[in-house]
Length: 133
Image (cartoon, rainbow, N blue to C red; front, side, top):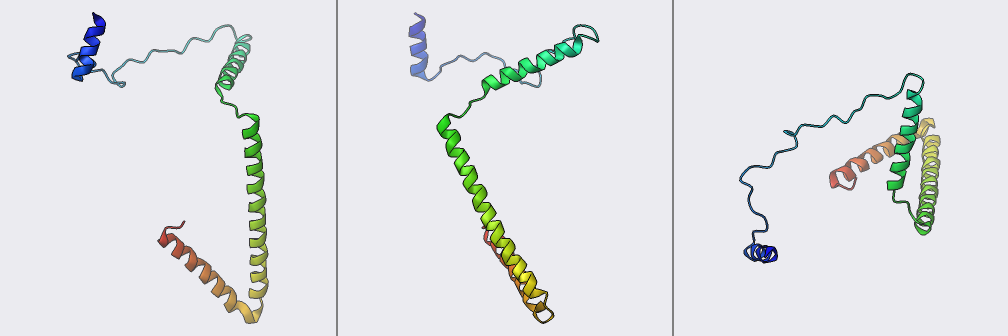
């Protein structure tokens, strides 16, 4: 008979009946005090807390979804490739910048360094305005 009522409620669209009162919010609920008094004396208390700490660490490590061997290998290769590409890019950037500095610090070429700096700042503002950055 209970199955018939459930099927009837589903067909009418009302799965649950109204309770007649509002559901209490989280803020109005009283929080249970889960903090317990420390057990033991001054000598054994550090031992209890250390054991408790490592048992909590073990329970948290059991919750971790560890990657399998294929994922670990793939992500390691990806990380190494990104590191190498970043190193090459920054190395090229450093060589270019040092060459600009060498050329720009000559007394006759100071305007060239200023033009490069203005072009870089202008390009950055352009990219920001365009929304690329």
